[in-house]
Length: 202
Image 1 (cartoon, rainbow, N blue to C red):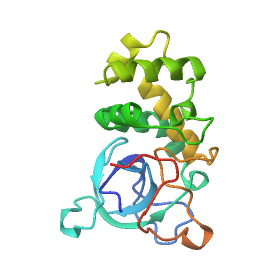
Image 2: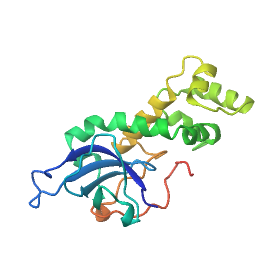
Image 3: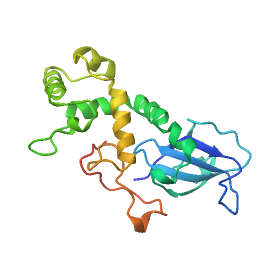
Image 4: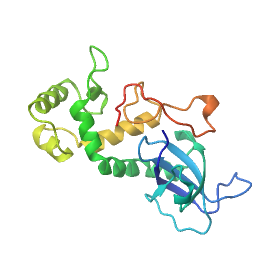
């Protein structure tokens, strides 16, 4: 399953300094799986950080992107892209809020001793018990409602954003919201995706 849209993290209209062809280059994070991507854009465009660009299979619909160079990992994105990453991811999380609320309402244990919710930053045993108790009474409908019903809980958009960044940094064993790291033999391709251990499905 490919990403249909990507959000711009950095735009290099003159290309990368180590690129002989100096093609206009954009670093993006995918909308559905937070895939980090590098792409070549069409020339003479005005592209801004946070812009949502179509990158799907229908080439006729690609107004800005010429081609996808491939999936990349965190060390390969530019320093500017890295500095914008958290804000752009939070923008995506806010945009997809209903999906993440559904995840919080329906997710379950990973093992006998650990629940998926405990993988979110700031969610310990106490908050886990409160969330499970409240969602059994009535499923959550929004992040704001969660904050009202769970005392002292951190903002759900913030903790999901932190979790996504940690997964992209390769700091986690389980992948709730992102694609697992690219195997070495696939690092220069842009393949599909068949499953995410411990993650949620849509």
